[in-house]
Image (tube, rainbow, N blue to C red; front, side, top):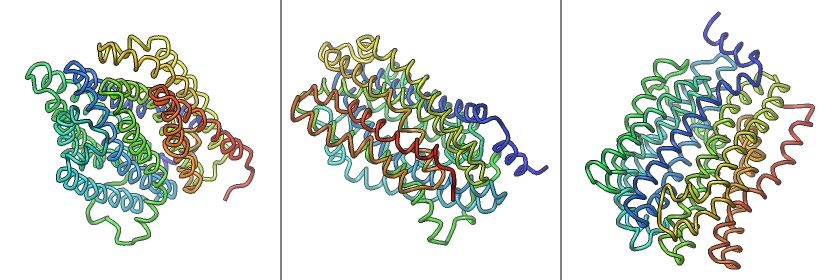
Length: 446
């Protein structure tokens, strides 16, 4: 039996819950480690004061922009790689991953060049105040330098998952995350390099993570990365962009919304920006679980849909939703009960705690609705229903959040800022239910 035959057997015969957990746990661990080293940045930089910590919130927006490009290419190509492997066509899979990888390298380099040229106005656009700006520049410079490595890493990571190699994807990201935490401690605490050191630690860890992922991909994946395999057919690029577009929307709108949130929070001072930065970091930690389980479901959905195992796709959607809710409920409950202590851990300023603790409690309520929206969104993307997936992606960070943020801030000021994202999460979850029900009731597929 060939490697392609063994992979086909694994994806279509393994019990669906076992398969999703097997693929989802490494992905969840990878995302948790990524989120934890973001929290480590917030913690170590927070020891330097409110304004430096607020800078991490500004750079969260920049990282979302980079991830938007990377996830679009990674998810877009990964879906086609999964389809090609279901057809036992390794050459086609190689063409798609190579095309996405080198496109990502070019896109990342362009972001680096233009970002560094316009660094100061860019940081202001993302929400920096004059007191935050010097720290945002120091951190942002390093994030931009590492941009091509970050984009290519995420392309490789996502394609490893779609090949069913989530464990190796986990190794690459977790190694970089652990090194980043160690680098933060060494450069901030030991060498007293401040925010500049935090940015340097992030850049170096991203480069090392990229190197590990590239070696693992070349050794472990069925497909490979080759310049010669890069497509010259515009239809391949359009296909990747079309299928990956929901990911671009999801992450791109997150960056736009985050920038808008920073700018609307400016009048309430650096303490408010720092407080919302802590809340967003914790929320991202909880979201990583939901997204990690959902991304474990993606290759299962994509492969089995192509193999016409529609019952397994439905079972996978139900299982992912239920499991996601159970895990998110536990983490969100901890955030709600220990909100004051969590904020205090990252910033001991009374103003930051006063603003951040209630905001964190509100956020945890909204997070409970994520399992209603994330799995179904990823399902439609994985089965190449780009229109539906794009609509669902627009909801959380765009169609519901931006109007909610503008209205609630105008009506209630700082309280409006604190409750805007939870309201958007609740609305997004409720709006996603009909799409889940429709898919589960569907008897005929294309």
